[in-house]
Image (tube, rainbow, N blue to C red; front, side, top):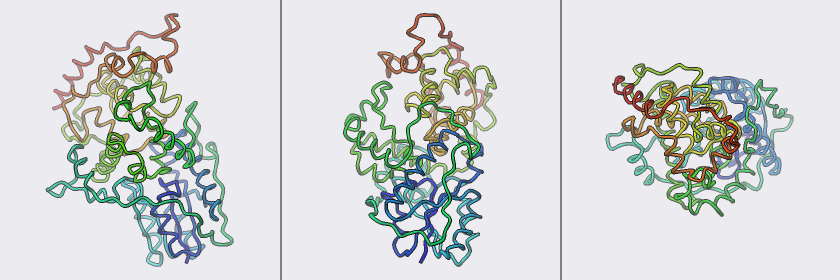
Length: 438
């Protein structure tokens, strides 16, 4: 029997339910990744994230080869390429890890329909801590839209034990052309980030080991300190499944860290039940009613890290340099864009998705709507309106983070710009904007 393992955001071999199931009775295994131009060149196209993806795939291919298999690569629509491969090798099963976005679910249905009744299609968990996010429901039977009650239900939800790493894998069917991994330029994209983290499960496991031995113990106290490096920096590896969320929950004994994993599951749960959130505000009262600024001058100053607010500029320059940003900085720069500058949260969402190597549609969209006060887990707008100077004093009191990314502040040569807006005045305008919208 030949089984196809269709890989997407599950680029690992440890604790991989779809891989385990595909190998169970298979004489031959066909692990395949399909480059889909709808994602490569869609509205969230990203050279940095695609380069990270290519490194993850190269590392996965090495791991598969060490165990008697290898990665098969195709480019095209999965509903064409997966059935073509299945017919070529007479596969009887296709296994994949289930995802939550509207695009992913529609793609999966198209592939299953194209495969027809002759091939059994199996969707497996593995992308989230809780296997059945849809099963987490309110007492009325609906989905959650507030985090705290979701968290209480999430803690009680059933868990499967995480699995280990297979020692050997079934070989590819004979005579199959495996294909080769493309380069970034072959895909029509370019790297825009200077110093990103390297991709792959091997790198992810080294970082996990370092985190568990170091910052994990004090994560609850240090995760918001911008210069302390208390963050795990595991989010890019979680996004592409180089690490299992379920294994992370088991191996990092920190309630604060576990809570962050819950936020990730929460936003996936929200997107699964409210797919229109990918394009519009969750709160209907704000759809089309908020008067957003369309100032390209202010937006470009924000993107380039030259707003005149050191913490804002440090965060935005970290994004440009590393393709990653500290979570506290993400909240502050998001508040500044949507509240101080009054610019549509979707502009910020797109910019983040262009550069972030951990750019995850559910989490990024959820966080942008959260900080713009238009999404789930609602609070009055003023509660999520951060003063950049107070945030810097609280979370970077010695200025170490700011100096790392805005070195001209210490030069004394007058090159640093004046603030592009006055925070106090911008705050008053924002509060009026939200009042008018209601």
